[in-house]
Length: 375
Image (cartoon, rainbow, N blue to C red; front, side):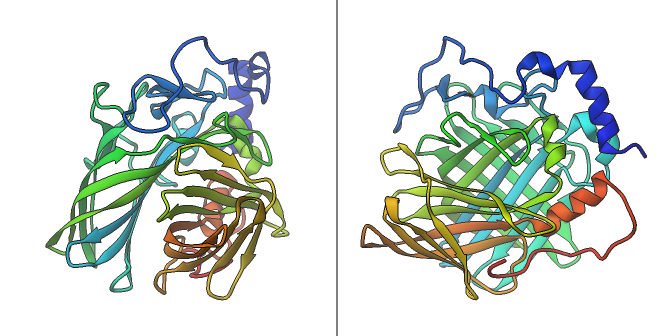
């Protein structure tokens, strides 16, 4: 099987990447109003270099940044009428330009349901090529009928969502309606962030209302809550990041603030190559925090950001969670108590699997997932 480097070399030569100015994003077109800081939200609109609804849809590998992989990732904190609590993680992934290399060896859809109340986790992977990943707007569907799609141009930032799977120990189905209630957070202000190697398009919808039905083993419950939608697209330079992994958190506080927090580490040394903390304030304004300390604790993590007044603890909500975790937040902001919810993604084991897919080598011990608590 050809190695990734060979395929990327062919793609680079055929697409003449140098003509696109390397790491620099294209100049902003003279069009489209800025996205509103509060509802009502309208299409089309723009934040930094990110345009809506266009960047909610598929990106072309023939246009900067020559996208070869992209995804929608959903982190829904759900509560049933009986008080039961859940985290539903789902991601839809497309990598058509490199499908000949990793198709059938890495999933196009991953779903994890954490039943926080009962301390159970259900996991699913779908290896089949996506039926749809539409350009121009949010519309994704799997071959099995799972979907995430917009409600149309006349209902900006509103969506329908469905995922279902059957395993030997579980029969899971979730169908919800989503409505964004705060503006997206364009990471780095532009919606493009420089990774250890190359650039990534990146924005997050940090507070999305969700309500619908969740069924577990034939028992259906009405659920509601808040969701975080993470949107990322990677150009050809992503291949140079295979020596790194990340820990990532989506923080949603009861004071109507949210924050994206992550650190990228070197696989061999565990040294932190990049760390990011960005806040989406209650008024919809973004703050990039230059200096902060993220500490690993036996029970979870501690975040201290003096310039923002943040002093928070993040603790997994139940034992036995792996890569995707439901967490509770407690602490203070400028001395005032706050609480909240967090989704954690401890991606080392998943990216180790991806590295093996991209660069197959001698057999090595495989991990089944991340561990609960701090890394």
